[in-house]
Image 1 (cartoon, helix red, strand yellow):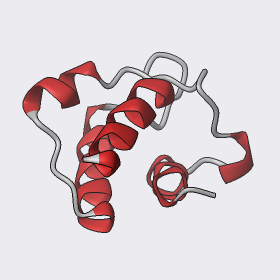
Image 2 (cartoon, rainbow, N blue to C red):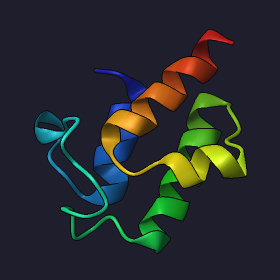
Image 3 (spheres, helix red, strand yellow):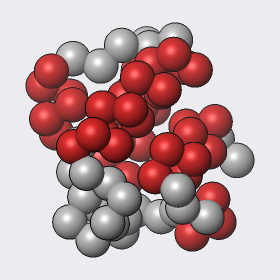
Length: 75
């Protein structure tokens, strides 16, 4: 399993096996603005990447987060 998926599950207190593209800020109680900040910090630290403000604003669900991360890992 990808490291970012493990971090996502840990920060949001979710079962790793249930993380999918349908998980969003709208349908996940544990994914509030504070959790989003923690998620960004943990991902940046673990993956040695940096998110821009524009990228952070575009994160609305797991799918959008994953696309941004995959783009950064390829850079």
